[in-house]
Length: 127
Image 1 (tube, rainbow, N blue to C red):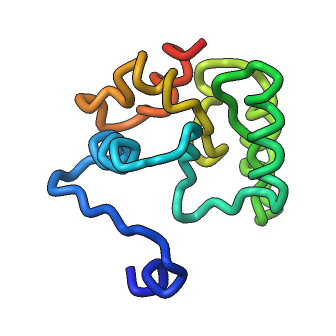
Image 2: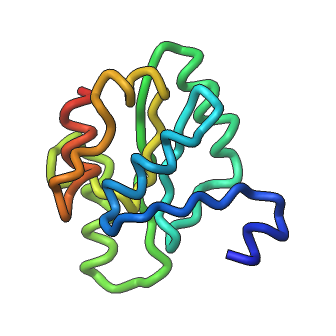
């Protein structure tokens, strides 16, 4: 948390456990029109800001990146390959997810009763 403060990043503390609840808590504090959800162990491409803004400006209200893992194990390569497909089981959070705040609000955010696969559910509803 100190690292975030050193970078002048606002830290939002959520009183409840659960990723969906915590992501909704963070989204409620957001002041800009585009939300970008990134897992702590994921590294987006350097061009993510420009990519997302350009995509939203062309009319898309949400999207995600393909996954690429540092490891060379066959399972990781197979998993990464499938993230290029538009299948429900391929909507994992490691891809990161951007969504307009307007659409996120219309969808009532992440479904807080879900303990896993909350990204999958949000993408399915957004589609």
